[in-house]
Image (cartoon, rainbow, N blue to C red; front, side, top):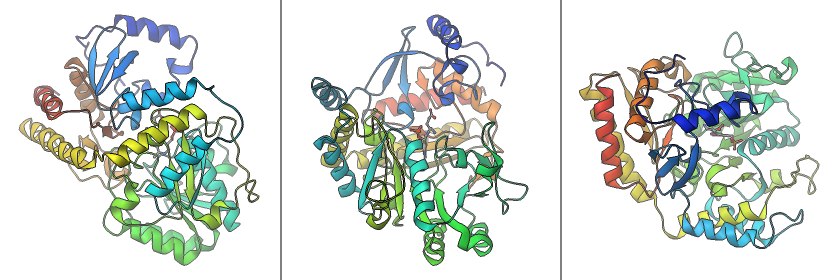
Length: 435
Ligand code: KE4
């Protein structure tokens, strides 16, 4: 990716910090999504955050539409969440023994997501999806897994797989270090393609342990399920005895308090969660039917463990976050502001005469720079990435921090006001004229 035209904002200290970090950590970051690889240039180093704003180490204030990639639905440094963390920390940081804080967070999740009868807390979304797949394989005695192009479920070896020579064939490794043996049991299909899913079940039905999918995709940009797609996945899994896993790490408590399964009315067998459930601290979870979850060690034989799983600080933050969402629902406000932002970005792109597609579910959305609706990776991959990079940096110059990739959803919070949304639209009006 070519480095974009020089930005006018002061990045001096961030550039020095990045160069220093790059000597110590691969790519200078602890997660590639932060490295600005898709937009060029060097990442901004953040000093602090509050409400809808990030403040970088060069003193730039940025209106934040990444929100830590999803967790910050109530804005940064929410005082109730901060107080919960501080209070928990005053009693120690980790015990390696069970606590009632874990039970409280589990109760909140079970109450919010009825399909989750039992759950296990882990430390990340990746751990959640990795464990859910192991459980599905252990419970069914089958090996094969279906996933979808453009769906990301964390850095699980068996899911770091690209579509084979034809989508109906088994996968091939999509990263060095992932073995042929690991990837050969993974089938990659096109999202929203019911025919391909039916054909895969016709061919592999009795070997399929599970189907894992993002019920609203965020990881190729925001791609909603087409009517009938989730229902078809549910029906085929039931018919063939495969486990349906909804990866709601991103959509859980984001698109509705009960997640995408509440919004779209389709019930999975297992659900994976992360991001919001930790209130910004490291929490993942996998849960679902009790007859499946009771097969997890020590209740059952499927192994899974974690030193810091259910950590006292993380569970305190997560419980505080979920109680805030439960007791004072932000979702109607987020829906209203989401429509305002979507309409404004669409208007700005239309006025600039730019081919675009705005796709939204609640407070997650994507402005795709392409001329067709995006139902799957086939369309997403046609987007104009150069144009997106110029748009990203143009918005940064105007104090608006969009996701640093065309293939990520933007998120906003309950602390983004209508005025902030209008400022964002005004910035987009100006930027899109020149990209
Ligand atoms: P983590 O292991 O990063 O907590 O979660 C992995 C994961 C699983 N499932 C879904 C649907 C996800 O979106 C994610 C992680 N999302 C990315 C952003 N698209 C995290 C950003 C990053 O990797 O730094």
